[in-house]
Structures are given as C-alpha cells and as structure tokens.
Amino acid sequence: MARSSISLQDVAREAGVSPQTVSRVANGSTAVRAETRAKVEIAMEKLGYHPNYAARALKSGRFNNIGVLLSHMSAFGNARILEGIVDAAAEQGYSTTIHTLDNLQDRSLSGALRLVRDLPLDGVIVIMERDFTDFNQFKPPQTFPVVLISEEPANNCVTIDSDSYGCSTAAVDYLLSKGHRTVYHIAGPSSSRAAQSRIRGWRDALAQAGADIPSIYIGDWEANSGYQAGLALAHEEACTAVYAANDQMAYGAMLGLQAAGKRVPEDVSIIGVDDSLEGMVPRLELTTLRLRFHDVGREAFSMIKRQHNGEKVPPGIKTVIPPEFIDRGSVRALRQP
Image 1 (cartoon, rainbow, N blue to C red):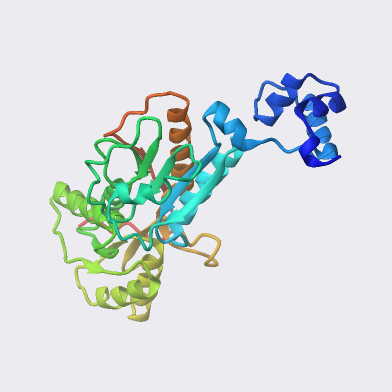
Image 2: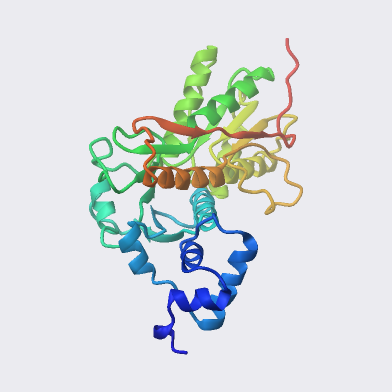
C-alpha cells in the first residue's frame, strides 16, 4: 500500500483501536497505555504510516521543535548545556534545531532571532557568551518564548545560568578558611562574560574578608596559559593559594608550579572551576567546583516548554544553578600562627 493512501483510520483498523487512540499516539499523548501504544506503533510501522507533522502543527500551534543559538559549540560548558537541552527535549518528544552565532554581524538579540524567524520553532534558547547591544531592551514576541543563558538577568527575558560569581566567592572563602591570607586568581579572557563574573566574585570575597587583593593573571581558558601563570606564581612569595577560572588553567598552573619546584598542595593550594577534566586526566588530583551545565540546559528547556504551555515565568530574575564542591586533595590547611 502506498504511503499516500494510508490513513489514520487504516492504522486504527490494523491495531484494533479507535482513530482517537491512534491520534493520541501520533501526537505523543501520555494518556495511552503502554501496551496499546505498542500495538499502534507496530501497525504504523507495518503500514508505513507517518504522521503529517506540518498539518498537526497548523492544528495545534506546536512544532515540537526548540531552537538553540550559540557560539563556540565545542567549548566544554556550551557542549554540556547543549547536551542537557537535547536530552530534556528528546524525553518530551521535541527536536532541537541548532544555529551558530559565530558569523553574526548584527550584535543584537533581535539580529540573532532573525536568523531563525522563518523556522518551525516553539521557542529559542540563546547561550550567551558576549554582550548584545539590545540585551535589556529586547522583548520577545508574546507567543514565542525566549530563554537566555546569561551571566546577568535581562529586563524582558527569562534568564538562567550556572553561578560563576558564587563559585568564586565559595572558592575564596574555602581557601581563606584553611588559613591562607589571600588568594591569587588566574582569570579567563576579558571578552568572556563568565570570566568577568568570576573576577568580581573573587575580588568581592577578598574585600569582604579584609584580605589583600593581589594582581590578576590573565589566561585564555587553555592549559598552557595556566602553566605560564603557574611558573610566574611560583616566584610570588606571598602565594600559598590559587583559584583558577577553569580546570584546564588550574591543571596547567599545577604543572607550572611543580616545574618551578613548588609542591601542590604542600607549598601552594589550588582550586579550579567546572570539573571538565574528569575522565580525561588519570588520577586527577584537582579540587574544583563542578558547574552543573547539563542541569542548566535541562532547566532552560523546561522554561521554554512551561511558557509554551501558558505558564508565566518571570523575566528580570536570573535562575541560578549552584555549583557542587569536589575535593580531590589539592588544598591543604595552613598552620595558624
């Protein structure tokens, strides 16, 4: 039987169920028993029936497809966020359409959204790594949910992210609690919003404790920049504790300190952020704050779906997914004088 001649009624007769039940299965309804769903799916496969998703979308106003806009898809955090979005979407029967912003000429959210305005989408998640000129002015269409994964809350958009500021204050407070008088920082590049948030958290935590605020060492997220910083930090007499803005730089700094004759943690304690090296570096001995990027992605998808279902999710407030402390022995307590 040709595909074009297969109808919903044909599938119902083959499966021994009502056309309404076939429709529920085709539309992903959960109000169908598992054994009945299996019978319908077997009948669909046998007859070669494929639901007309375009017609279904016209009728329901849903495409079951979420857009994701981002730059640097291979970056650890972005990749893990994207994985969370795709996993959550698939569990709910949604597809994911990905569009990169690497070549975006119009540095505005409005310009970014124009890239996907003609696509069949139920909403868009924007993973922000840079500033947009209309960040606080942009208003998404009332019937088209937009969620920003952003360091700062937007005035008119729903916003979520990991806690870059909070992970810095937690790292500094932990090191100071171990008797270190101050904490040196290896920061990410100045173009990164996350790096700037971590600098603010580091500086504020030291100021709050009344500790000296040493000079910042600027890296580029890569291990080699951390290694070079570690070589330099080995000659800082006051340096007994280092907080690096990601694990690659922290691990590089550890190697640089050791190459310069310093022991970790006996001479210098070190903490990283993100837990990106787990499963990659054997016998990893780096204490870190794990950023729950996967959970950020899952929650961002949930925010899109809830809005599409008519739920009000307030803009102007950033939902924060807190970090998880992972102790792997690269910090030691100093003897108190």
